[in-house]
Image 1 (cartoon, one colour):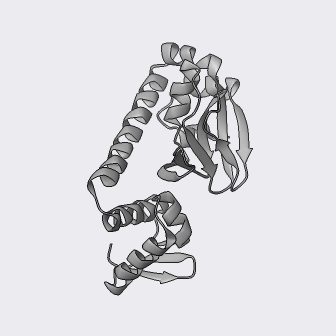
Image 2 (image 1 turned 135 degrees about the vertical axis):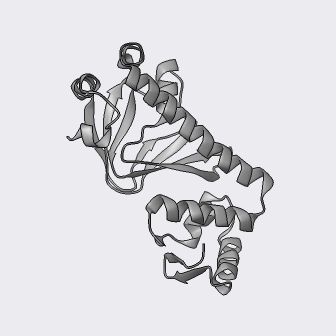
Length: 207
């Protein structure tokens, strides 16, 4: 396990410690890592793969928040694990995922004894908070076509590709909209030659 390559900001002492106390866990594509109401026993450091996080409403509707990828950690698991609180979100493996699970009983010690871990936790909070602010801005202040554009840009940038494999229904679920509305707005973007649509795939042209 090449932790140094994945977390270059950690010194040898910290890497050695988390490798000793952590356990490598794996999740298959489509497997749920986290559900609302679940207590955290571990905080996860993502070693490989991609995890999608959602917020679930009272009626079961879902809204996409952000991805966790290699080198990321789940800020919510850090908070809830330390305070012994339950999760308010869902997390799903979008590919085969490998993670380092660090038991919650070690969280306080890591914060006190390893300054680099302390800074890593703060940076994780900051990055996710800023990302959530962007999401809130889109939800509150923008129309659905603007939300869709913002969503697609996040997908393209996140995957680092001008092509993403995704269905209209998946987009609709993530944006808490209907498939019909999303399909209509995608067709509009295609007519503007900003994207190209094929079966279960969207290509960025001028985005």
